[in-house]
Length: 418
Image (cartoon, rainbow, N blue to C red; front, side):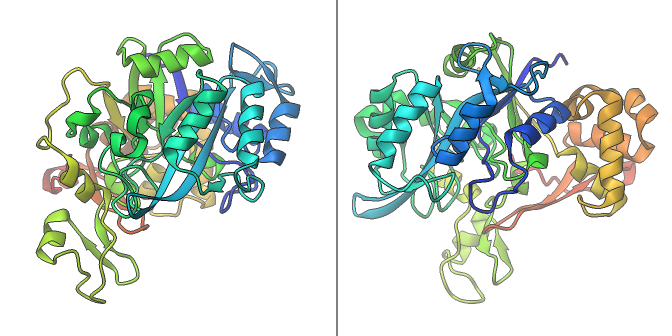
């Protein structure tokens, strides 16, 4: 497999809530090289302090992309991106929708910031909360610069997304009305994958992108997009918009069961349910007798007009992977932050080139030469989808086990639901 341009457009800076202090441009550059990512979203460009750092520390590279002034030889490029949280009332219901905005230039980002600062407080958080209808936000952004890109973020997350079970809509048209034609892509999010989205014919002409939504440098690239196109803002956007499989090669995905909202449930009650079980319980938690948080799998089932496995013809393919440090931690039976896991990760990445090369390209022989037989086998198992998963629910990440030997592989349940 030949690696082309790997891009992760959606991250957050140190100025967002619950984000690592290490989420700065210099550290992102280091980790992008370690991961094998060529294009990083800046995230948070509406935050005044972060935007000041962007303008001070970055300089123009290819058209619409930027690089660190202090690392001119670095292959890492940055694109101006931000996530906006819109909380508003529409059709008698409170809506909470997160949307991504890509800007082609500093000047355009500056105009967006100036306009949004008159509407709400953009200083309090890297991902600002505005009482602004998503349609109106789209109208403002395109009015400033039609080359901007507007993408519903983690489109299925229950509480904060365009299709979310708790506060979203049943279609893009319901949310964006006559401007819905300007939405040519959605972000699938960690708890869904493209195959789940293919079940909805209303998304047939919509590109599906995947990003990490990372709050720490180590987690960038846990989902990503892989392109073979011109390295520029317009080149990348055209590849997404066109859905040309020669330009937009594939997306890298979490196993969706590992996401925090795949199943239904109540975290405080330790209750997790499949959509069928939820239906049997009429959506009520059997412990506290309150309504459960309805997860992504259930929500997809509700809006889908196709069966599982249908709708994949002509679509951009995807590859489900587990981050390398999680694979190593599982093999060692240790936490991802343990010193032994970190040391093994660093030496393997350095020996092979970067994390994506380890996870996707290196054959068993090369892996075995640079790490233990168990870790090499684990990486190959993940690549082939041989994993065991306990789905996440109600904000709780799913649990994942790498199947390391033939006995495990032979006796494992078919836990991949899609």
